[in-house]
Image (cartoon, rainbow, N blue to C red; front, side):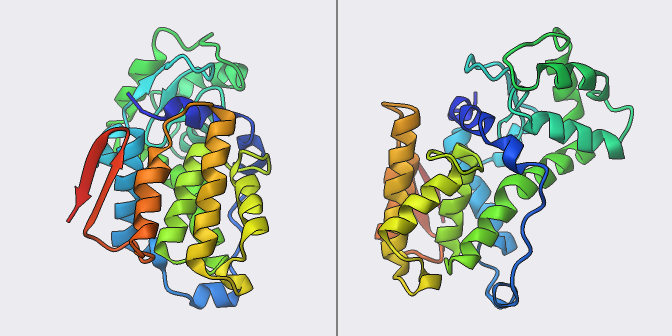
Length: 270
Protein backbone atom coordinates (compact mmCIF):
# COMPACT_ATOMS: atom_id res chain seq x y z
CA UNK A 1 0.00 0.00 0.00
CA UNK A 2 1.28 3.46 -0.80
CA UNK A 3 2.36 5.00 2.48
CA UNK A 4 1.56 8.62 1.63
CA UNK A 5 -0.97 8.21 -1.16
CA UNK A 6 -3.88 9.49 0.90
CA UNK A 7 -2.03 12.66 1.68
CA UNK A 8 -0.82 13.14 -1.89
CA UNK A 9 -4.30 12.70 -3.33
CA UNK A 10 -5.88 15.03 -0.82
CA UNK A 11 -3.30 17.69 -1.56
CA UNK A 12 -3.55 17.35 -5.32
CA UNK A 13 -7.35 17.37 -5.26
CA UNK A 14 -7.55 21.10 -4.68
CA UNK A 15 -4.79 22.08 -7.08
CA UNK A 16 -4.37 19.75 -10.03
CA UNK A 17 -7.00 21.51 -12.13
CA UNK A 18 -4.86 24.61 -11.98
CA UNK A 19 -1.78 22.96 -13.35
CA UNK A 20 -2.14 19.63 -15.13
CA UNK A 21 -3.28 20.90 -18.55
CA UNK A 22 -0.41 23.34 -18.83
CA UNK A 23 3.03 22.57 -20.16
CA UNK A 24 6.06 23.43 -18.02
CA UNK A 25 7.31 26.95 -18.55
CA UNK A 26 10.19 27.28 -20.98
CA UNK A 27 13.52 27.92 -19.30
CA UNK A 28 15.51 31.05 -19.92
CA UNK A 29 18.84 30.94 -21.75
CA UNK A 30 20.73 31.13 -18.45
CA UNK A 31 18.76 28.19 -17.06
CA UNK A 32 19.33 26.19 -20.23
CA UNK A 33 23.07 26.72 -19.82
CA UNK A 34 23.15 25.56 -16.20
CA UNK A 35 24.19 22.01 -15.18
CA UNK A 36 21.47 19.33 -15.52
CA UNK A 37 21.25 18.73 -11.77
CA UNK A 38 18.42 16.35 -10.93
CA UNK A 39 17.62 15.89 -14.62
CA UNK A 40 20.85 13.92 -15.15
CA UNK A 41 19.84 10.26 -15.65
CA UNK A 42 21.63 8.92 -12.58
CA UNK A 43 20.24 11.72 -10.41
CA UNK A 44 16.72 11.23 -11.72
CA UNK A 45 16.90 7.53 -10.91
CA UNK A 46 18.09 8.38 -7.41
CA UNK A 47 15.22 10.84 -6.96
CA UNK A 48 12.65 8.17 -7.84
CA UNK A 49 14.18 5.82 -5.28
CA UNK A 50 14.04 8.38 -2.48
CA UNK A 51 10.44 9.29 -3.28
CA UNK A 52 9.52 5.60 -3.46
CA UNK A 53 10.96 5.02 0.01
CA UNK A 54 8.32 7.42 1.34
CA UNK A 55 5.50 6.57 -1.06
CA UNK A 56 5.87 2.79 -1.24
CA UNK A 57 8.31 1.71 1.46
CA UNK A 58 10.80 0.47 -1.12
CA UNK A 59 13.65 1.65 -3.33
CA UNK A 60 12.14 -0.33 -6.22
CA UNK A 61 10.00 2.47 -7.61
CA UNK A 62 9.14 0.49 -10.74
CA UNK A 63 7.13 -1.95 -8.63
CA UNK A 64 4.30 0.61 -8.27
CA UNK A 65 2.98 0.81 -11.85
CA UNK A 66 0.25 -1.76 -11.22
CA UNK A 67 -0.75 -0.59 -7.75
CA UNK A 68 -4.46 0.29 -7.40
CA UNK A 69 -6.55 0.62 -4.25
CA UNK A 70 -9.14 2.80 -2.56
CA UNK A 71 -7.32 3.80 0.61
CA UNK A 72 -10.36 5.52 2.12
CA UNK A 73 -9.14 9.10 1.75
CA UNK A 74 -12.20 10.36 -0.11
CA UNK A 75 -10.42 10.52 -3.47
CA UNK A 76 -11.60 7.27 -5.02
CA UNK A 77 -9.00 4.89 -6.37
CA UNK A 78 -5.31 5.65 -5.93
CA UNK A 79 -3.18 4.01 -8.59
CA UNK A 80 0.15 3.79 -10.28
CA UNK A 81 3.59 5.21 -10.08
CA UNK A 82 2.96 8.48 -8.27
CA UNK A 83 -0.44 7.94 -6.68
CA UNK A 84 -2.76 9.13 -9.45
CA UNK A 85 -6.34 9.38 -8.13
CA UNK A 86 -9.73 8.97 -9.78
CA UNK A 87 -10.98 11.88 -7.67
CA UNK A 88 -8.22 14.38 -8.44
CA UNK A 89 -8.20 14.64 -12.24
CA UNK A 90 -4.64 13.43 -12.75
CA UNK A 91 -5.65 9.79 -13.30
CA UNK A 92 -8.30 10.87 -15.80
CA UNK A 93 -5.76 13.02 -17.63
CA UNK A 94 -3.32 10.10 -17.76
CA UNK A 95 -5.88 7.69 -19.22
CA UNK A 96 -7.18 10.26 -21.72
CA UNK A 97 -3.71 11.05 -23.01
CA UNK A 98 -2.76 7.37 -23.15
CA UNK A 99 -5.95 6.43 -24.99
CA UNK A 100 -5.35 9.07 -27.65
CA UNK A 101 -2.18 7.21 -28.58
CA UNK A 102 -3.39 3.69 -27.76
CA UNK A 103 -7.13 3.38 -28.45
CA UNK A 104 -8.75 0.15 -27.41
CA UNK A 105 -6.62 -0.33 -24.31
CA UNK A 106 -8.05 -2.06 -21.25
CA UNK A 107 -8.83 1.26 -19.52
CA UNK A 108 -10.46 3.08 -22.44
CA UNK A 109 -13.91 1.63 -21.70
CA UNK A 110 -13.80 3.33 -18.27
CA UNK A 111 -13.25 6.86 -19.59
CA UNK A 112 -16.94 7.88 -19.41
CA UNK A 113 -17.10 6.71 -15.79
CA UNK A 114 -13.78 8.36 -14.95
CA UNK A 115 -15.13 11.67 -16.26
CA UNK A 116 -18.29 11.30 -14.18
CA UNK A 117 -16.51 10.50 -10.91
CA UNK A 118 -13.74 13.08 -11.37
CA UNK A 119 -13.56 15.22 -8.24
CA UNK A 120 -15.46 12.70 -6.11
CA UNK A 121 -14.84 9.52 -4.11
CA UNK A 122 -17.38 7.57 -6.18
CA UNK A 123 -16.67 4.24 -7.86
CA UNK A 124 -19.79 4.52 -10.02
CA UNK A 125 -19.16 2.77 -13.32
CA UNK A 126 -15.71 1.62 -12.23
CA UNK A 127 -16.55 -1.44 -10.15
CA UNK A 128 -15.91 -4.25 -10.28
CA UNK A 129 -13.58 -4.25 -13.28
CA UNK A 130 -11.45 -1.10 -13.09
CA UNK A 131 -8.76 -2.35 -10.67
CA UNK A 132 -8.17 -5.49 -12.72
CA UNK A 133 -8.06 -3.43 -15.93
CA UNK A 134 -5.47 -1.10 -14.38
CA UNK A 135 -3.28 -4.02 -13.31
CA UNK A 136 -3.62 -5.61 -16.73
CA UNK A 137 -2.72 -2.44 -18.61
CA UNK A 138 0.19 -1.77 -16.26
CA UNK A 139 1.90 -4.83 -17.68
CA UNK A 140 1.97 -3.07 -21.06
CA UNK A 141 5.26 -1.20 -21.59
CA UNK A 142 3.49 1.69 -23.34
CA UNK A 143 1.27 2.33 -20.31
CA UNK A 144 4.24 2.24 -17.98
CA UNK A 145 5.89 4.78 -20.24
CA UNK A 146 2.73 6.90 -20.16
CA UNK A 147 2.85 6.96 -16.36
CA UNK A 148 6.48 8.08 -16.56
CA UNK A 149 5.56 10.86 -18.97
CA UNK A 150 2.71 12.14 -16.81
CA UNK A 151 4.86 12.05 -13.70
CA UNK A 152 7.51 14.07 -15.50
CA UNK A 153 5.07 16.52 -17.05
CA UNK A 154 3.17 17.39 -13.89
CA UNK A 155 5.75 16.89 -11.15
CA UNK A 156 9.36 16.20 -12.10
CA UNK A 157 10.03 18.62 -14.96
CA UNK A 158 8.35 21.58 -13.21
CA UNK A 159 10.34 20.86 -10.04
CA UNK A 160 13.65 20.79 -11.89
CA UNK A 161 12.78 23.93 -13.84
CA UNK A 162 11.68 25.88 -10.77
CA UNK A 163 14.76 24.73 -8.91
CA UNK A 164 17.09 25.85 -11.68
CA UNK A 165 15.34 29.21 -11.93
CA UNK A 166 15.89 29.65 -8.19
CA UNK A 167 19.57 28.72 -8.54
CA UNK A 168 19.29 25.40 -6.69
CA UNK A 169 21.43 22.33 -7.17
CA UNK A 170 20.31 18.71 -7.28
CA UNK A 171 19.26 18.55 -3.62
CA UNK A 172 17.14 21.68 -3.88
CA UNK A 173 15.53 20.40 -7.07
CA UNK A 174 14.74 17.14 -5.30
CA UNK A 175 13.26 19.02 -2.34
CA UNK A 176 10.98 20.82 -4.82
CA UNK A 177 10.07 17.53 -6.52
CA UNK A 178 9.07 15.77 -3.31
CA UNK A 179 7.03 18.81 -2.27
CA UNK A 180 5.17 18.79 -5.59
CA UNK A 181 4.45 15.07 -5.29
CA UNK A 182 3.15 15.36 -1.74
CA UNK A 183 1.38 18.74 -1.78
CA UNK A 184 0.45 19.11 -5.44
CA UNK A 185 1.00 22.12 -7.65
CA UNK A 186 -1.01 25.26 -7.04
CA UNK A 187 -0.95 28.56 -5.19
CA UNK A 188 -2.79 27.61 -1.99
CA UNK A 189 -0.93 28.02 1.31
CA UNK A 190 -0.31 24.28 1.66
CA UNK A 191 0.42 23.68 -2.04
CA UNK A 192 3.82 23.97 -3.68
CA UNK A 193 3.69 27.62 -4.74
CA UNK A 194 2.36 28.65 -1.34
CA UNK A 195 5.21 26.83 0.40
CA UNK A 196 7.77 28.39 -1.94
CA UNK A 197 6.30 31.86 -1.40
CA UNK A 198 6.49 31.45 2.39
CA UNK A 199 10.11 30.31 2.16
CA UNK A 200 11.02 33.26 -0.05
CA UNK A 201 9.64 35.62 2.57
CA UNK A 202 12.10 34.13 5.05
CA UNK A 203 15.22 33.80 2.90
CA UNK A 204 16.46 34.79 -0.53
CA UNK A 205 17.02 32.13 -3.16
CA UNK A 206 20.53 31.73 -4.60
CA UNK A 207 19.23 33.39 -7.78
CA UNK A 208 18.33 36.40 -5.62
CA UNK A 209 21.78 36.47 -4.06
CA UNK A 210 20.95 34.36 -1.01
CA UNK A 211 22.77 31.39 0.48
CA UNK A 212 21.46 28.06 -0.80
CA UNK A 213 21.53 26.33 2.58
CA UNK A 214 19.64 29.16 4.26
CA UNK A 215 16.93 29.16 1.60
CA UNK A 216 16.51 25.38 1.63
CA UNK A 217 16.31 25.43 5.41
CA UNK A 218 13.51 28.00 5.15
CA UNK A 219 11.75 25.95 2.47
CA UNK A 220 11.83 22.79 4.59
CA UNK A 221 10.48 24.76 7.56
CA UNK A 222 7.62 26.00 5.38
CA UNK A 223 7.07 22.52 3.94
CA UNK A 224 6.88 20.92 7.37
CA UNK A 225 4.44 23.58 8.55
CA UNK A 226 2.25 22.97 5.49
CA UNK A 227 2.22 19.23 6.14
CA UNK A 228 1.10 19.71 9.73
CA UNK A 229 -1.44 22.37 8.79
CA UNK A 230 -3.15 20.12 6.27
CA UNK A 231 -2.77 16.90 8.25
CA UNK A 232 -2.20 17.54 12.00
CA UNK A 233 -0.03 14.83 13.52
CA UNK A 234 1.27 13.56 10.18
CA UNK A 235 4.68 11.86 10.15
CA UNK A 236 7.14 14.42 8.75
CA UNK A 237 10.16 12.13 8.53
CA UNK A 238 10.38 12.49 4.74
CA UNK A 239 11.44 16.06 5.59
CA UNK A 240 13.04 15.70 9.03
CA UNK A 241 15.26 12.65 8.63
CA UNK A 242 15.57 12.54 4.86
CA UNK A 243 15.82 15.92 3.16
CA UNK A 244 16.92 17.82 6.27
CA UNK A 245 19.56 15.19 6.87
CA UNK A 246 21.00 15.63 3.38
CA UNK A 247 20.97 19.40 3.87
CA UNK A 248 22.67 19.22 7.26
CA UNK A 249 25.35 17.02 5.72
CA UNK A 250 26.00 19.73 3.14
CA UNK A 251 25.15 17.37 0.29
CA UNK A 252 23.75 20.02 -2.06
CA UNK A 253 24.63 17.86 -5.05
CA UNK A 254 22.64 14.89 -3.68
CA UNK A 255 25.58 12.57 -4.26
CA UNK A 256 25.74 8.98 -2.97
CA UNK A 257 26.43 7.34 -0.67
CA UNK A 258 23.17 8.31 1.01
CA UNK A 259 21.52 7.11 4.19
CA UNK A 260 18.14 8.28 5.48
CA UNK A 261 15.15 7.27 7.57
CA UNK A 262 11.49 7.60 6.66
CA UNK A 263 8.46 6.22 8.50
CA UNK A 264 10.71 4.24 10.84
CA UNK A 265 12.72 2.49 8.12
CA UNK A 266 16.34 3.11 7.18
CA UNK A 267 17.41 3.22 3.53
CA UNK A 268 20.82 3.36 1.89
CA UNK A 269 22.10 4.04 -1.60
CA UNK A 270 25.81 3.22 -1.88
